[in-house]
Image (cartoon, rainbow, N blue to C red; front, side):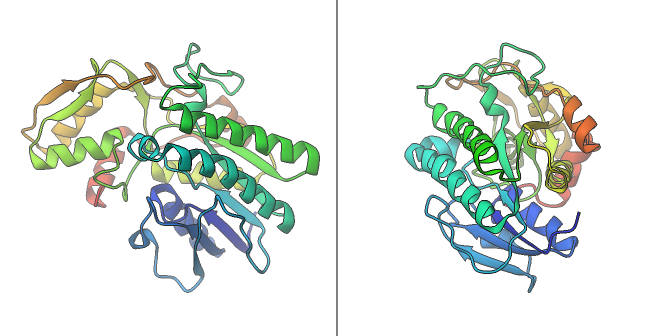
Length: 308
């Protein structure tokens, strides 16, 4: 499916900037909407078909002209960011999603809402299927992100039911790649920064908690596949290969050739013990699955400057 003009909220962020590039490669004109609190203009390509609107999505979006695709990616995704700005995170996840949906409704556009594996909380089902309702602490510190995304999903479904909005939901699992900030706070950029500086790699808890790590190039393919269809979702997008945090730390030390040691620090509050997506729905509906192994993805990321 071809789109003439797309709006990407959070388009200057890590994931959003890759989506902007991918759409431009398709020949789509792109409007990046970002307030640059966690994104950077340096992430954006120099392309005359890319427009930039500096705006907080928690405020109504009023854009002129035709729009036939909205990719709603705006929201702090790093615990460091959303724990520092809890109220703003809730506003972005709530009001921001409302305004993105209203824009799509006015423009009669397809909209893809970026939700998260965090809606499953600390899951009691493993691997996590889209039919699982989750195990979320609604008053814990992480709830500002988790519950904002859960509310965003409910809002998206309400727009689809009441107004017939062509809206789809993807639940994104841990993603990594070029353009993650060194001070992002997420696992891989933190480990890479520490390894390059020769500092101990700080592993929260005993390191046996698991994650599924998907390279950003794979993830963007999945997002655009969701844009190209009319499915409502939710659809899990992530790598079903499960690795422990300790394994990831050792792999980063090995691949960077660092002399860093590994240091265990206090576990994070409500940190999920296990995370692994069931991607059967993505395979069936989108014909999508990850193709890039963790070793290959990390090498690509190092070559393309994973951080900084």
